Length: 417
Image (cartoon, rainbow, N blue to C red; front, side):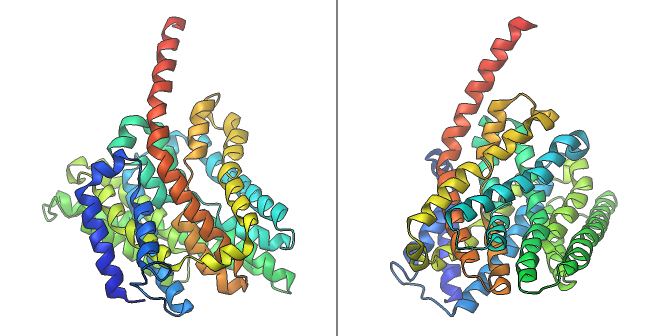
């Protein structure tokens, strides 16, 4: 796997997709989908311009690409969100993130257990946990840009962005709980999950990351007030903070994903309060640059033979997960989310726009060797591909339906007043 060739083809795709950005959006195609297709065509399964490397090398490259991509997407999400979004909608967002993840974990695991009874319950729980988080990388292609801003209400876009950012990091303790349960089946210590994973790697990590992010935001604010800050440095400063959080907390053997989002959210407080230092479209720039590589690399690595070996059962798993992993969970939670209570159409839209992407790839790669269970890569990788294609192709058509519904509701609501 030649890295220079990878960079070469990624650069071509970024240039072309940038040159024809609006045309691509109009035909309901997302950049992750294009990158995935290009990776398949260029890779060893079609043109073989980029040849396969040793599996451990390929997975290490993919893991690093996932970490970098998630870090940029989470920082962009933190910068995009309104300053007091959680305080104003605490009940709705808490239920959506906490219980939504639990329901999605249970539903996904149940589907795998139902269709692959030869797997143990703990193996199914691990696969279900991996595909649970709503991905901020793919979600950003659905909720940002001119089309999304035109068709999707801001409330839906902000809620999806917040959920995708938070549950990306919160999936970490769930994935490792499933991993420890699987290990406990063979004599592992489940108590270590509580002290090491939950308390140290996640809770303490979130507290420290908030402090680091707040400190970086305070530094930038003071530099701006003192006249030391150029008004066009937010992009490089934000990327620097994201990489500091990612690299620093990785070295501390903590959860770098939750560190980037929590730290980025704290950092963004002072940035969003000073609109004169907020660069236009900075979030979209950060996301576009970092989204393409990981999906291109995925296209080079797809396990076609392993998918074929599992047969139609795997296809059925993917269809059921896409349809029933998220929609039932949000419908169950609708009465407990004041922001969306009795808004069935809004909940259905949010239930569909919950893509599975880079986060699932990251957790699959992270746990593949730890679990000694190859299916934690084979099944989630196909789910990610299917979600990238299906959610990408349906985003614009479904978004265009939204204003028709909301406009009709508003007109119907006027006589009642």
